[in-house]
Length: 157
Image (cartoon, rainbow, N blue to C red; front, top):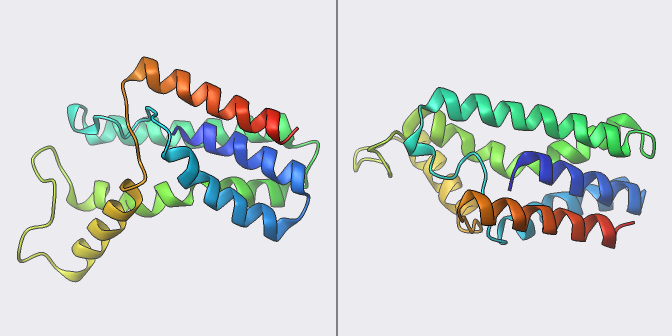
Protein backbone atom coordinates (compact mmCIF):
# COMPACT_ATOMS: atom_id res chain seq x y z
CA UNK A 1 0.00 0.00 0.00
CA UNK A 2 1.00 3.57 -0.38
CA UNK A 3 2.42 5.16 2.76
CA UNK A 4 -0.41 7.67 2.58
CA UNK A 5 -2.90 4.81 2.97
CA UNK A 6 -1.00 3.46 5.97
CA UNK A 7 -0.93 6.96 7.50
CA UNK A 8 -4.66 7.50 7.12
CA UNK A 9 -5.52 4.17 8.71
CA UNK A 10 -3.04 4.80 11.54
CA UNK A 11 -4.62 8.21 12.14
CA UNK A 12 -8.07 6.63 12.29
CA UNK A 13 -6.79 3.99 14.71
CA UNK A 14 -5.27 6.49 17.15
CA UNK A 15 -8.26 8.83 16.91
CA UNK A 16 -10.58 5.93 17.67
CA UNK A 17 -8.65 4.21 20.45
CA UNK A 18 -7.11 7.24 22.20
CA UNK A 19 -4.77 4.75 23.94
CA UNK A 20 -1.16 5.28 22.79
CA UNK A 21 0.08 1.71 23.37
CA UNK A 22 -2.94 0.15 21.67
CA UNK A 23 -2.73 2.60 18.77
CA UNK A 24 0.96 1.89 18.22
CA UNK A 25 0.48 -1.89 18.19
CA UNK A 26 -2.64 -1.77 15.99
CA UNK A 27 -1.03 0.67 13.55
CA UNK A 28 1.98 -1.60 13.15
CA UNK A 29 -0.23 -4.67 12.65
CA UNK A 30 -2.51 -2.80 10.25
CA UNK A 31 0.43 -2.45 7.89
CA UNK A 32 0.57 -6.20 7.33
CA UNK A 33 -3.20 -6.58 7.08
CA UNK A 34 -3.35 -3.84 4.47
CA UNK A 35 -0.39 -5.19 2.51
CA UNK A 36 -2.13 -8.58 2.27
CA UNK A 37 -4.83 -6.92 0.13
CA UNK A 38 -3.89 -6.68 -3.56
CA UNK A 39 -2.52 -3.19 -4.07
CA UNK A 40 -0.19 -1.01 -6.07
CA UNK A 41 2.57 1.11 -4.56
CA UNK A 42 5.83 2.70 -5.64
CA UNK A 43 7.67 -0.56 -5.00
CA UNK A 44 5.55 -2.31 -7.61
CA UNK A 45 7.69 -2.93 -10.69
CA UNK A 46 10.49 -0.78 -9.24
CA UNK A 47 13.04 -2.49 -11.50
CA UNK A 48 11.43 -0.76 -14.49
CA UNK A 49 12.50 2.66 -13.13
CA UNK A 50 15.71 4.22 -11.95
CA UNK A 51 16.23 3.73 -8.22
CA UNK A 52 16.41 7.48 -7.72
CA UNK A 53 12.96 7.97 -9.28
CA UNK A 54 11.43 5.25 -7.12
CA UNK A 55 13.14 6.65 -4.04
CA UNK A 56 11.93 10.18 -4.66
CA UNK A 57 8.38 8.98 -5.28
CA UNK A 58 8.48 6.96 -2.05
CA UNK A 59 9.81 9.92 -0.05
CA UNK A 60 7.07 12.11 -1.53
CA UNK A 61 4.49 9.51 -0.52
CA UNK A 62 5.79 9.52 3.07
CA UNK A 63 5.54 13.31 3.20
CA UNK A 64 2.03 13.28 1.74
CA UNK A 65 1.09 10.60 4.28
CA UNK A 66 2.20 12.71 7.22
CA UNK A 67 0.43 15.77 5.81
CA UNK A 68 -2.79 13.80 5.18
CA UNK A 69 -2.63 12.36 8.68
CA UNK A 70 -2.22 15.86 10.10
CA UNK A 71 -5.06 17.30 8.01
CA UNK A 72 -7.56 14.58 8.90
CA UNK A 73 -6.55 13.73 12.46
CA UNK A 74 -4.33 16.55 13.77
CA UNK A 75 -7.24 18.21 15.53
CA UNK A 76 -8.24 14.95 17.27
CA UNK A 77 -4.93 13.59 18.55
CA UNK A 78 -1.83 15.18 20.08
CA UNK A 79 0.65 15.66 17.22
CA UNK A 80 3.56 13.76 18.78
CA UNK A 81 1.32 10.72 19.23
CA UNK A 82 -0.21 11.07 15.78
CA UNK A 83 3.18 11.31 14.08
CA UNK A 84 4.55 8.42 16.14
CA UNK A 85 1.65 6.18 15.15
CA UNK A 86 1.97 7.19 11.51
CA UNK A 87 5.70 6.43 11.56
CA UNK A 88 5.08 3.06 13.20
CA UNK A 89 2.49 2.23 10.52
CA UNK A 90 5.15 2.88 7.84
CA UNK A 91 8.00 1.16 9.70
CA UNK A 92 7.73 -2.23 7.97
CA UNK A 93 8.40 -0.58 4.60
CA UNK A 94 11.25 1.49 6.01
CA UNK A 95 13.10 -1.51 7.43
CA UNK A 96 13.17 -3.22 4.04
CA UNK A 97 14.61 -0.12 2.36
CA UNK A 98 18.32 -0.97 2.92
CA UNK A 99 17.97 -3.94 0.56
CA UNK A 100 16.69 -1.66 -2.20
CA UNK A 101 19.18 1.14 -1.61
CA UNK A 102 22.41 -0.74 -1.00
CA UNK A 103 22.14 -4.15 -2.63
CA UNK A 104 19.30 -4.76 -5.09
CA UNK A 105 19.40 -3.59 -8.66
CA UNK A 106 17.67 -4.33 -11.94
CA UNK A 107 19.51 -7.64 -12.33
CA UNK A 108 20.26 -8.59 -8.74
CA UNK A 109 17.27 -10.21 -7.07
CA UNK A 110 19.02 -11.96 -4.19
CA UNK A 111 22.38 -11.92 -2.40
CA UNK A 112 25.38 -13.55 -4.00
CA UNK A 113 26.67 -16.75 -2.39
CA UNK A 114 29.58 -14.82 -0.86
CA UNK A 115 27.40 -11.94 0.44
CA UNK A 116 28.22 -10.54 3.85
CA UNK A 117 26.11 -10.54 6.98
CA UNK A 118 24.53 -7.11 6.39
CA UNK A 119 23.49 -7.92 2.85
CA UNK A 120 21.95 -11.22 3.93
CA UNK A 121 20.21 -9.51 6.84
CA UNK A 122 18.81 -6.77 4.58
CA UNK A 123 17.60 -9.39 2.12
CA UNK A 124 16.02 -11.47 4.90
CA UNK A 125 14.09 -8.46 6.19
CA UNK A 126 13.02 -7.60 2.64
CA UNK A 127 11.81 -11.15 1.98
CA UNK A 128 9.95 -11.39 5.30
CA UNK A 129 8.21 -8.06 4.76
CA UNK A 130 7.37 -8.90 1.16
CA UNK A 131 5.83 -12.25 2.08
CA UNK A 132 2.75 -10.23 3.11
CA UNK A 133 2.56 -8.15 -0.07
CA UNK A 134 -0.04 -8.82 -2.69
CA UNK A 135 0.73 -6.62 -5.68
CA UNK A 136 -1.48 -5.89 -8.64
CA UNK A 137 -1.64 -3.38 -11.49
CA UNK A 138 -2.11 0.34 -10.93
CA UNK A 139 -5.85 0.57 -11.66
CA UNK A 140 -6.97 -2.41 -9.59
CA UNK A 141 -4.40 -1.61 -6.91
CA UNK A 142 -5.60 1.94 -6.44
CA UNK A 143 -9.24 0.88 -6.32
CA UNK A 144 -8.56 -1.77 -3.68
CA UNK A 145 -6.51 0.75 -1.74
CA UNK A 146 -9.26 3.36 -1.76
CA UNK A 147 -11.82 0.76 -0.71
CA UNK A 148 -9.51 -0.56 2.05
CA UNK A 149 -8.81 2.88 3.49
CA UNK A 150 -12.50 3.78 3.20
CA UNK A 151 -13.44 0.60 5.03
CA UNK A 152 -11.06 1.35 7.91
CA UNK A 153 -12.15 4.98 8.11
CA UNK A 154 -15.79 3.88 8.26
CA UNK A 155 -15.07 1.13 10.78
CA UNK A 156 -13.08 3.42 13.07
CA UNK A 157 -15.40 6.41 12.83
